[in-house]
Image (tube, rainbow, N blue to C red; front, side, top):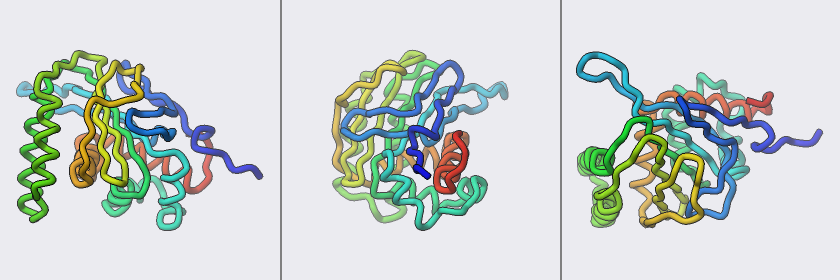
Length: 226
């Protein structure tokens, strides 16, 4: 029997008005990535209404991700993977590239997006004793990149994460992924923290974590197309 590739078994996903395609080539990489999961980020406003702010797609490097995750996680169900902090850690830190696309549902400024995140990361790293000059430099570049940006609905923030520590940031319209980013940061801790803030057990996008777990479980166990 011929083994199917990720591109043959993974389908596109729609979050609100935005469709995440099955495969992409993101800025800063020559590899092809498959759609591992997608979902929305939202929260309740002061009147208790749930407001959706962004649609998020998480992509993993084709073939390399499945090869890396198979020995340890083959045979696990979607529910087991979705509830496993160890599995999510292996996705975030694994020796393969990751790409995250954050598309605006509501308008947002770069300052709103970046400052609170940078502050939260700094406090966490200091409490863990892993905040060094390298992390401080990475955060400074990150804040400068976002400082003057204003995002309208349909515009996207793009993060490409390499296991070597190369972190590429780009911006685009949702369906128009550029070949090159606008900034490159050399740091492993920062991009891993960003991805963890999205798909981690306490991340802001549980839908992306759950669909990622379901899709990876199907691929590892040679399931039907999803």
